[in-house]
Image (cartoon, rainbow, N blue to C red):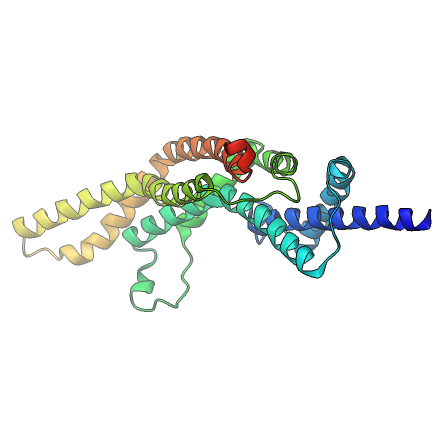
Length: 265
């Protein structure tokens, strides 16, 4: 009786630990949950609470796991990788917003110091503005609820002992990474196009009136034009971010299904 009780307790502890590892991977890389503004103590508490809730739900469906050092190390790595990939997929839109804002910063001149000292660490003002806006839209769409739901879904689609990186998985990862660049350029496009036209007009002005100091004049004009278009394009950026975040939910579900060969085939 004692041996049977110890075996059941051991299985529960192992399954709970593996589920805790998957949740930890998500909380390290996911949007909102992995943000530096969230205290580590809060992350740890939420991770533990979710693990305590999820473990009884999936204990009966989980197979017996042999307690072996190598086997446990591989399972822990696999569970953390699944959670980290899940969080990475959810963070693409946030990173794209920061990337697009960084391009705008460089074009307007807010990050001109990096041209002289690449290690200066100048903040991306527009990048942070876009990123915070994207984060607010994410919360408005209940994206944090979706990430928790995706954890439960991942336990059903990718059980503890099932994990295979298929050709479909690699294809989705490459598509996701490429969409990061495309989305960032879309976010930065209004300001980039406007400033290109401003530079073109300044070039024509320098040819028409050589006596004017167009170089010094360009700083004020580019900043003024950039801020004006930046404010005017905020609704457009919001629409693009909202559509990208909604598409992200579908992509995460597809990504999870690609990790189970039985569902892919």
